Amino acid sequence: MNKFYIHCAIPYVNAKPHIGHALEFIQTDTIARYHRLLGEEILMLSGSDENALKNVQAAEEAGEDVQTFVDKNAKLFQDLAEKLNVNFDVFQKGSDKKHHHPSAQKLWQLCESAGDIYKKSYKGLYCVGCELFYSPDELDEKGECFEHPGKKLEEVEEENYFFKLSKYQDKLITIIESGEYEIIPESRKHEVLSFLKSGLQDISISRTNKRTKNWGVPVPGDPSQRIYVWFDALNIYQSGVGFGWGDKKYQKWWPADLQVIGKGIIRFHAIYWPAFLLSAKLKLPKKLFVHEYFTVDGQKMSKTLGNVYDPNIAIKKFGSDALRYFCLAKISPFQDGDFSEEKLKEAYNADLANGLGNLVSRIAKLCEQNNIQATDGSNVWCADLEKYMGEFKFNEAIAVIWELIAEADKKINQEKPWELSGEKLKAVLLDYVKRIQAIGYNLQPFLPETAEIILKQFSGPIKSGLPLFPRI
Ligand SMILES: [Zn+2]
Image (tube, rainbow, N blue to C red):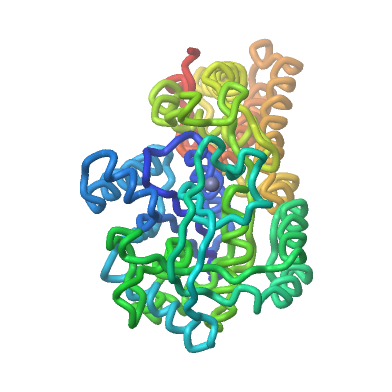
């Protein structure tokens, strides 16, 4: 059996989850479910980036100790995933001293033995939002980073450990250009290559205890410093599958077959992470899929605008599968898409209550009236759906299923089964049943709850059920 290790990004847990986190969880889970149905053995991982300075600052503002604060917020992410039927096999916390700390330290030691870590004093502009030093030419005209407008950068001067990122520039260009390390979509691959070709600087990979307030993974052999958050955070993808504590597990699952991340953290994943792994002489992940963001009511989500949308609200009002449907079907993963409750409601009523729900209840009713018994459906993917799933075009894959729905609707209206009887009627109804079974089968990765209900309802003697999506 082939293994398939997939992970999404590990969110910072300095605040509660927003709709963008739901989007990434749903995309990741859909891919994982699809691969599971292809017969592969799946491990799906997420976790929480708990050692960031911004977690320390947010905890201070909340007047809580950091551990209590990150535990509480990490739980909110786990709860959200559960409500979305996104069942991570591993949720690896960054503050886990049993597995994660020794694992991050092992990665450090491997890079150190490769001669890639050195100490020097450093002065630079630091964005706590990104946990990253910027050079002035990377900032906007106000001297702020593009991810965090309105946030002043801190001028920081301290002695840190540095990683020889520059040493890996050529190697990274080679493996990305050749597709040995694949970045999807092509436009993001070009972005990474042009950044690499503009020249890499070595990066600071530690912080003083003073600046981290003694929070984070201690640097091996130097108790005065903590490991820089990205160096340890990226390693969650390994520490969660045994690196440094469970060789057998690690051998089985590493490397990751697919990483799912948002565009804002591409540099860390497409450059830093493979460079650390190359230095440590470990295998690289195979593929990186970079998705775009949600705007909310037409604007970029921000605390200042007050439009940060809590996905729990949508789940409560419309249900988990409805939110999954919107995130997958109504935006392209490769373009920013807009979310609003109004748009979700429209999609819910038009496509779920009317389209899918109406078709299923119509056919179930006809079958019940005529005592139709379902035989097993065939478990086959629509050809185009397979193609689109391979390209992570969830919206196009779902559109293929909605074509099946439209076709079935059309067929019923043409054949008018309510005017038929006897063998002719039975044959027509059995054909509808096959169609519904195919729809249910193909829906599984996208709308798991709904697919399960449909497949159950259309096995054995068929009965009418409750509406799948009552109109709102
Ligand atoms: Zn920033």
